[in-house]
Image (cartoon, rainbow, N blue to C red; front, side):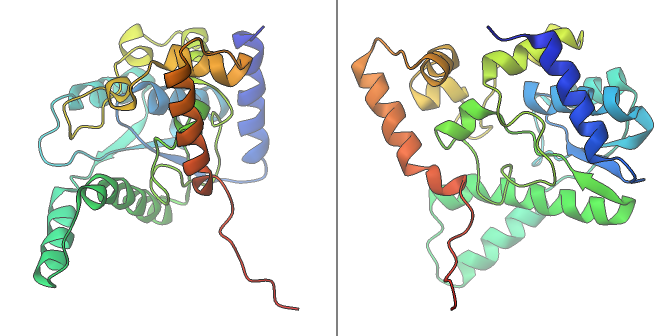
Length: 241
């Protein structure tokens, strides 16, 4: 049985240990969704609001940017807004000029990688360490971007399922609008679960208990997990002897 209170305290202690003997701050991308909100709240509990620096990174006009502003105000953390649209448009434009056919995969993954580049630029400027905000459920089926949101210097929640992450958020007394906000990719107009074709409740039960009553969904999860394992493994290296 998952103990949210105990796990929350253990994560806070782990963050404190990670930053022990360091005057660095946490740099975290704030989307207003559950993962960044709960990660930021854990870091505030561990280190204090003055050592957490939020970076809001809309791509042009973001319809739900208000959640990000409300979150940083709720936590009382310093923050900046960096609109990444010009950077993405410039890169895609240059690729198109080269004659390269920019496909949907590149269009989907490039913003995540630009955001991570932005976070590391901010981190260098403020003496920070970048927080990875991924969770186990999304990582399990590859719903994350290599060298994008999968990157970071420390990862408090990557071993927790979505169900468990939400429970941590409730233990932190975060308003439900942050812990239960429906995640979406911001491109297709669909939620994450609609894109995946199954719910996180079904996925989380399969991860933790190995149970999935629908054989079609079970097969889909297994195939996604196998196909995306490369995202979670170290880069293959030739071993010189």
